[in-house]
Length: 490
Image 1 (spheres, rainbow, N blue to C red):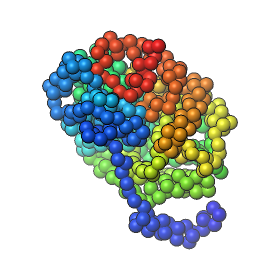
Image 2: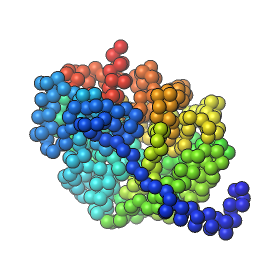
Image 3: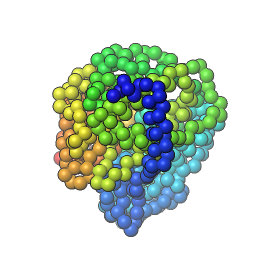
Image 4: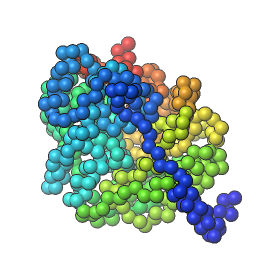
């Protein structure tokens, strides 16, 4: 079948048919979720609906201080919300107050000489990109999508494709916070790094991040260097990449289709060209329906998933020689990934594995993961690999040494039975990661057990002790606090 598809005229017809179908047939839907005082509040997956009491839109510092102080007096609970792409109830709490930071979104200053930007916590990554690209600058670290809020990205300790600068938290030079008892404070990396490390990657449990000053770098121009790599040689390949200072960013994709399952992979390197883009245009999303059609094809499993893998790999390899700016490399499309199938949900999970354990980890996965999950309730659609440097900026750090991040896209039924099946599946992934001295990422649905959390984050008891010392009334809470951090006291 695939040899037949390689004929130029067949491919041309196929492309035309797909393009026409995508334009006229494929719907572009948005997931319905968010904050509500009258209905149930949810985050991106919609799996943890909850009735909250009040929503306060953030307007100014004085208002925020007043809300926190009043909550201490009245015995109320506070959670903090941005765009709510964390998926485990991190942004709300039963009968609690939610502070909606989205309106608090000003770009306060761009210092071209010092290469810094100061922004309010509700600003989106895309807002920063709009402001700094005009001056030939770019963020040092950002997630690969620009749709998240700055405060949210810092609270979940977000990372991206950059392989030199660690997580986004490592780029924070200064921050204004409101403590759990309602004190407005300015913290600097030079003088208050320890205190900052609780707010960064702290999931909104240590107070409110009001604004931050982030380090910037030049908006460099990179050349795409895609390549197929043998799975068995990726460790050595990656070490060579890390030793090559001309490579600024890197990620990889590992096959999950039945024909090539965990036996094929391709990588994308972003190599410096020596050029800096001045006031370069920021790319916008294009061909959304066509991209969605391709992803929907992969979601079918079986031979369709193999076809999607081959098409995806070919498209990436054809980028050889093309260029992209740093800002645009951290501006990937997201709309085509929206998934709104009734009775089903797609969730993310992420596991961090020491580089030297990569081959053993993948081999371990092969012993129990099904090659073809087309007819299974729980389906694995994608594995993207990213590189994270050792994290010295946060307390609940997932990278205590340089790690390979396995980012998984998983589909499962949204019923109680489906959630329990997903728990069993994801807990086995977690056990496999722990067996290879790995960790897992905390911003997602609470599939993991308390014991797995303790094993992955042995510092959690210390973090809880500090939390209770700083927030004796336990004003700042959320589902993550209830499901995990609070339980390490036992």
